[in-house]
Every structure is written in C-alpha cells, then in structure tokens.
Image 1 (tube, rainbow, N blue to C red):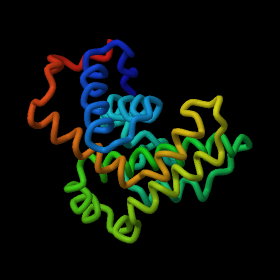
Image 2 (image 1 turned 45 degrees about the vertical axis):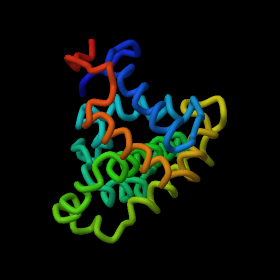
Image 3 (image 1 turned 90 degrees about the vertical axis):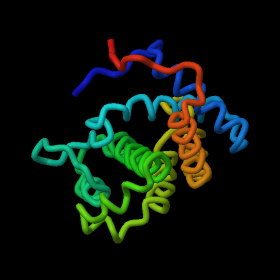
Length: 183
C-alpha cells in the first residue's frame, strides 16, 4: 500500500481550504475537528487502494459495501471492539465519500455488485459512524464526538463534500497542487 501523504503536503492544504470554505460558509458546520477529519479522508482517498482498504479473509481488498458488511459479521478478533470500530469507521468513510464526492458512480458500482443495490449508502453510513462512535471515547483518533457528528449529519456532510467537488472542478481555489507525491 502507498505511504500516507505527509501532513504538510500541498494537496492537504488545498483540500483544507476547500473543505473549510464549503462547510463553514455554505453548509454551516464550523467544527474544526470535523473539517480536519474530512480533509484527512479526502487526502487519503486520493489513493484508490485506501478507499478499498479492507482485506477479506484471503488477503484481497473488498471493493463493495456488502462485502465490508459481511466482514463485520464474521469478525472473530479477540480485540473485537477496536477492530469493529475501525471497520465501521471505514464503512462510514467509504459511503460518505461515494455519496458526497462521486454519487454518479453509485449506479455503476451497483451494476457491478448487484448485492449493493439492496443497501442504502446513506443509512449504512449513518449507522456505521454511529456504531463506531459507541465503540470510541474522546481520547481516540478520531474522537467519539467527530464520529457522532458524522452519523447525525451524514446527509449534510455528503452535501458539503459535493460542494467541495464542485469547487475543485471549477478551479475555485488559488492553492492548486502540481503533483501528488506522498513523500
């Protein structure tokens, strides 16, 4: 897997400006912890393998929501709560990313994975963030409060991420990255 993009990388600053402008001015969610979390998610999901980061039992990466939900059902790790928290958080991120940034791809994804047609990305995203928040505390990363906000405001966050995409497509930011080098 590719290494994480460093904290001072220009792409992270670019996303930060876009997310803060969209969420604070147009959406009305002014929580710095939430916007920092969303910037981190967008930055990490630049690499497709991070979107589909959950491995199945054979080591292959799961690329559909139904497969991710199945992994949760068969989870037998002795440290189950920590693992379930991460699985649910990833499912929340996955559903938020697709419903907010690229909702037009959901139809194509559903055709490719018939079983995902039966799952509501909005409902599952809210549910997964809610479960992850119950398995968290405020000392973890991200803190429980951020996961609660993501669950309660899932639709609003998806809308805000759609605004972020429109802004980057229109070139509305003066901080435009030239390369995406994780070093």
